[in-house]
View 1 (cartoon, rainbow, N blue to C red):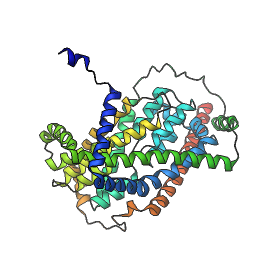
View 2 (view 1 turned 90 degrees about the vertical axis):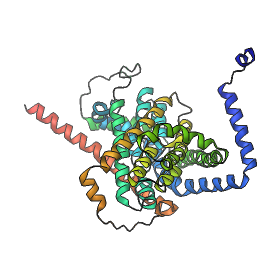
View 3 (view 1 turned 30 degrees about the vertical axis):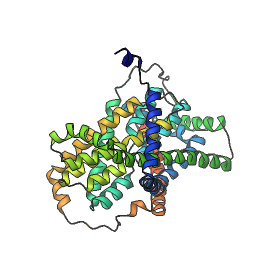
Amino acid sequence: MDLFQKIKVRPIQFIILATLAFIISMVIFPSEVFEASKTGIAAWWNIVFPALLPFFISSELLMGYGVVRFMGVLLEPVMRPLFNLPGAASFVMAVGYTSGFPISASLSARLRKDRLCTRYEAERIMCFSNNASPLFMLVAVGVGMFGNPRLGVIIALSHYAANLIIGFILRFYKTKDPEYVPGPPQNGNLFNRAFLEMKKSYRSNPRPFGKMLGDAITSSMDKLMVIGGFVIIFSVIIRVSALTGIMNLITHSLGFFMIPLGFTESIVNSLSSGFFEITLGTKAASAAAAPLAQKIIASSIILGWSGVSVLAQVAAMINDTDLKLGLFTLSRFLQSVFGGIFCFFALNFGPVINWLAKPVSTGLTPHLGYYFLPNLIFFTRLCIYTILGWVLTGIAVYVVRSFSIIRLKIR
């Protein structure tokens, strides 16, 4: 008894033992590990890299020129009452809802470093602005895995709705923020104040365009290489876990909760894969021997959770800040629950059932989501549209507020 009391397994010891076991497994299963690595590289190069590159580069440029601060002043009147966040968080939200994991975490960390938000504000925006890529949900999942783009729409809407609900809930988290200091009432032209803030931001670190573009590309490539490493290593971990029986333990644990809810064993197996990585999990869910509704709900749950791989990527993005991962992990669990519930009600709603029953034709090919160049073109356009929409939203808020002030003065 005394011997067992003296033996204490600390986190670092557990990590060392797990790493040694993983290395031994790679030696025992070299061919399987090699194939898993190739799968991870293909997923990173064809899906993740083209999806995130335009957003990473453009976000670095917009922050360097102070455009984010400019829009932050304009959109403060919207973000503060809705989400209890500064206006600069609107940029993270816009990018997060149109790109994919984990760029929102990177931008949240950048806002925190630039002191554009408090620690609790950065953690909140990080929690509800991390989403799966729209192209992945609509094309790769909807068309490529389920063969019906309308199912991709149902999954995407459930995914985004769940995250927005989390955003509204988190509005009440840490309302007594010790770092937040309400500014004095601002008088004068909102647009002029925003422009002065942008000029002040740029003058704090002025750089020629060539230098700024080069720094943006360098920073973006560094982050993408880190993300690529996580994608590849978790592809190998999933394969090794399946070969060594660890996946079966996770399946039995999930089955204890999911089978009483009516899910089949095949669906539970797909959820086990999705626990680690969303691509393999959603693919397994779409091929499961189960009713179509269960497959769609399972895919929504997996996309909401996002996988341990994404959690690790987010941890890497916020590593050099004071942001914590606990709230983010809880929000992923809540989004998986809310996403599954929204899918369940949508699939039992009469008009949605009739819409899904109608014949559908699409010019998209099932493998479009896995080609590098089409993905890069798609997300470059989406990035441009996102920035334009973000700017137009700020201008619209400014115009509405200006008219409101004029009406108040007339009265």
